[in-house]
Amino acid sequence: MKTAVFAKLPRAGLGNKLLVWARAYAFACRHNLPLYTFNWTTLHLGPWLRREKHKRYYRTYFKDPEGANRNRFLWARLAGKLIPEPDMETPVDAVQKQVFVFSRVLYWQHAFDGLKPYREQIRQYMGKHLVADSILMQLANAPTPVVAVHIRMGDFRRIPEGESMQGNHNARTPLSYFSQMIHAIRSVAGSDLPVTLFSDGYDDELKEILQIPDVQRATPMSDIAELLLMSRSKVIVPSASSTFSLWAGFLSDAILFQHPDHYLRSIRPEASNEKHWEGAVGTDPAQWPEQLTRQLRSISPGTA
Image (cartoon, rainbow, N blue to C red; front, side):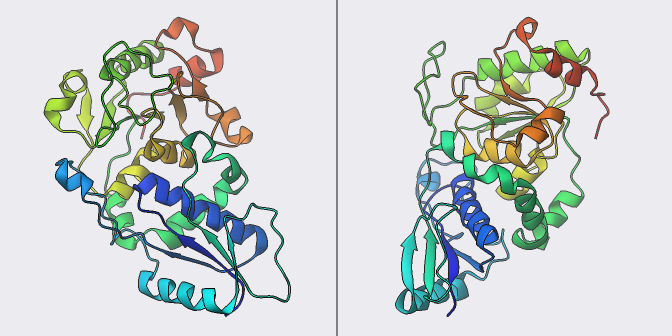
């Protein structure tokens, strides 16, 4: 077998699996090498025990032939030199067979750093070669959101209302933050822009948001379809430290809000953010930058 790149996906949620895949894909692009991916399908008991809405079972989401790619990996390990977690500049030996393996989940604050130069290639590959046709068909008939709000619950822990999110990772972003952001966005836009709510929570957990006028839950569909649909929105309000949220933002041409207690750097290329604002602001729109307010005011409630 020739030198190749393998994405050996971790036992993790969809956002983290995609991050490992994307690093492997970017490395394969950088060095013009074949990429093989496996372990999209893993059984997670936690979502069942916690009675979560989403069970994190991704078997039918992707086109990769899991069994064949796993077998390729087993044979490749015997035939070539194993190189785990290379960086983008790791040299490729022109003679010796090498097996480059990506499997580690990076800390979310740095997860997209090396992917920015490959953003457009990643977007195109996902739409043409990675995501299953059945998923794309789901999306074809789904209405495009104007404002997408993602509220991650699941195994994220609750923190007391009013406690700072700073230093609280894998914690639920308070519902009051989303409520205030919805009202702030609408006040700047000058109209009640329709809001589509994406969440793995139940309706009774989300009452504070669902009772706001013109807020509706997204039509139930697969996790990857929800992520891709959210990425088509005009505005995205993610949950803090949720890689699922951030993936939608990374793929999008949307105004992208990030939580001020969790924002270190942009996740999209500078050229993209010159056209579509990305950053972290508080819930007081009087403090928002002019680029953001100008772009919000240009959105029509009927925009699709």
